[in-house]
Amino acid sequence: MATTLIHDQLALTYPDSFAVMGADELREGYLDDNPNRWGIWDRNRHVIIVVYWHDSNAFLARLVSTKDLAKRAQKLVAKAYTGHGYQLGQFFETQVGGQQAHGFGYRYDLQGTGQVAEAVVTKYGKCCYTLYYYAREEGSPTDREVFKDVLRSASFA
Image (cartoon, rainbow, N blue to C red; front, side):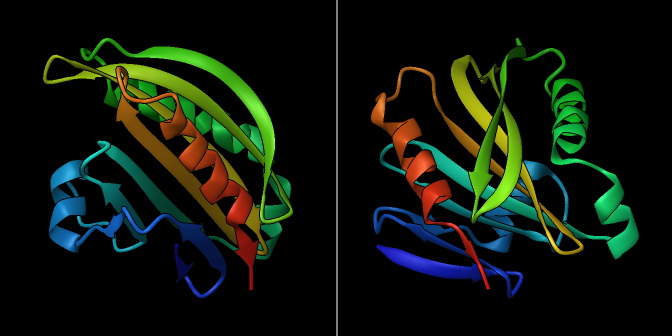
């Protein structure tokens, strides 16, 4: 197992089968140069986990709920996957690092291959974190358990 500290706040533990994605790999996958992104990839299992973070002022961070942020993220994801067979799954509530979190599942097609994904949004202080999980639809049922284990490992410094 490996552990990393993201944005000097969010600690995550993940299996050794994952490799940290470089800036070029993240740019290729997301088609932008967002510096507030970290990701890991298990190439053999075709599983990717990516974390985005966004700092705002403390007042705004208190005003917006993680449920509202998850709904906003879902709308952005739906727009991004227009034309790729996007289908919304279920919204859910969970915890990340002891903090309230909300998320949703979805599926889409990428180059003719069905993909399953989840997005989970949480806040810590004035920072919002969104954790994404992507895997092939025909992948192992244990692939999602890996993401859940990563979420359970989360702690805030």
